[in-house]
Length: 194
Image (cartoon, rainbow, N blue to C red):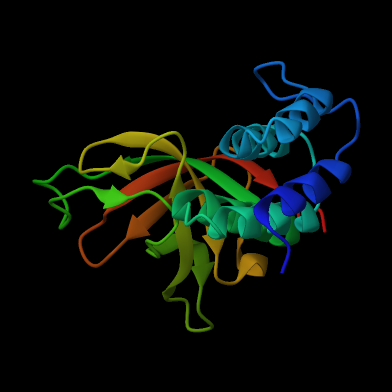
């Protein structure tokens, strides 16, 4: 098995030379940081570049393994999540959780993709009943989300093909049980890139 530095070098080789992170760091800067053995900085910049430039599943898988070795679990889960998105597409939403007095949830949940709530996305059974769909949930730019809070989030549907009809502006409903746990407005739907 390759060490983390080798994995990061291989990931850099998958990028175009003109790829730049939002903070202005270039692929050349990343190569210099690898030479200085700035491991965590390199990982962070590569994740930022991958978040703003189209990259391959292989890129995300290399970063996931490089994150796993030093047990950077949240980074590993994010890289695995992004690889899944490349394969299956992305549904981004603005999620507003019901307040503690309205819903069942009384505490915040970890926003790192482990929660798998059910969603009413408008699908119906053959008999015309509401059909709920399952999707994992990643909260953007926050480690936790609690009752009454709102944040942008990414959804990873268990069966992505059931979600293809969604478009920007659609409102979907989140359930963890009864009553409603929250509502979300779709802000972006991207197809698979793999």
